[in-house]
Image (cartoon, rainbow, N blue to C red; front, side, top):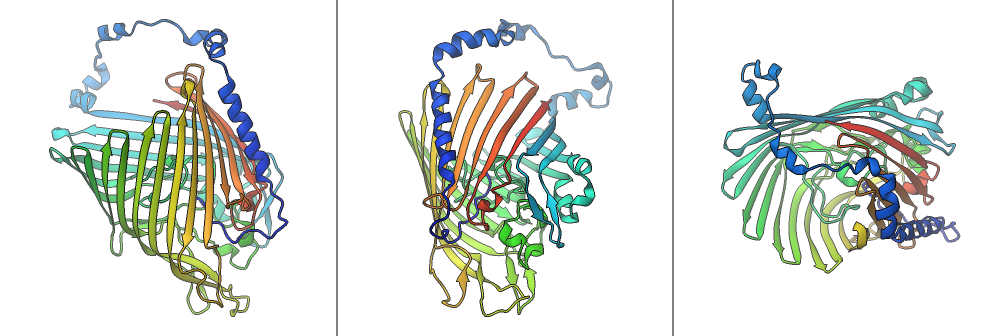
Length: 505
């Protein structure tokens, strides 16, 4: 899921509470998943899926001898390429339909209509793996897309910032070389994604990689991380392992630009609407970041401790003597821990992190318009996450996660008004289960902001069906729940349905 937006002050009393119907719907749909009887799955569905049930003797595969293609064998070093080089990837076409009529400020005094078709794109992904001597390996990934929806709807209806981010992109994924330095020590150099923590939905200790967050709520965090250039050392000794990261690249989140329908209304209609932070650049100037962790894995439980001194991946506005400038970097520190414990069909997980010198916005009422009354102050914050997962019959999984983000030294200056509340609560319920002999995976996800869910939220129902080993189709329904206009509650009219057909090779 997307990187959660810290909830602001609770809404005034009397604000309609619209989250409950969605969560009731989630509970009913969850009961539906549980309620499908095993006899139906085994009997009636056998008839539906008869085309996929052709018997095949796996032992026959042993009789098949792979042979190098003639065209490849004729090339210089063709046999080495065949044995040590592997090229894989995917091609996909997808679409998104916004079924609610809504507009967004374009940051130039006009408004853009975002009803109807909002995405019709062609995506490509390539991955090259090269096996080197001594168990070393090279991996290089490339990806890109072109969205035809902007030509269908008319490119002149969108400002340049929106077209730059959404219409087309060509980018690199992970690019690195990795291999052993010693029997128990591995080295990785290059652009890499590092997944820290235990949560599937929220980020507490997961602070290394920025996110591609231009379409909040559409996919989970695991599909949003953007790689960073780093030097990574991994060492293992029995149940213990350690990781050290040196990160010379400064890279930020890819965020919705001014003019997008994913700019909160409070920003889009304010004097700073055209200056909402957006920076997906990368550079190698300045001091590198440092991070490390130690893991211990034992029977029935595990734990990790973390430390980091890295850049915030999401920039904030900074004010210097009146004019607005964008803060290039803000270095913060982290000390954290995480752990899992299993008991039968239950999994208990937790994360805690102390973060120091975070940039947070404040409103300065002493500054008169047209200069936006914004200040930035460094604050410390304590983040905690507790989660519980249950693994039921037929691979049914139900997971609950709750996060609290507590600002220390709050409130600060009595004159300045904090943009965020002292405590931000985020909760998520996820229900998933496979059907049709694991060819169809269904997932229901509900995220609520605020201790009473008063700050908005997201509901997503999604499914992925495997047509064959190479083809799959997926789709879903994304709903935003109303709340304060400065968080995801401001996206109340951005509900949409989406689908994608993908071919992998």
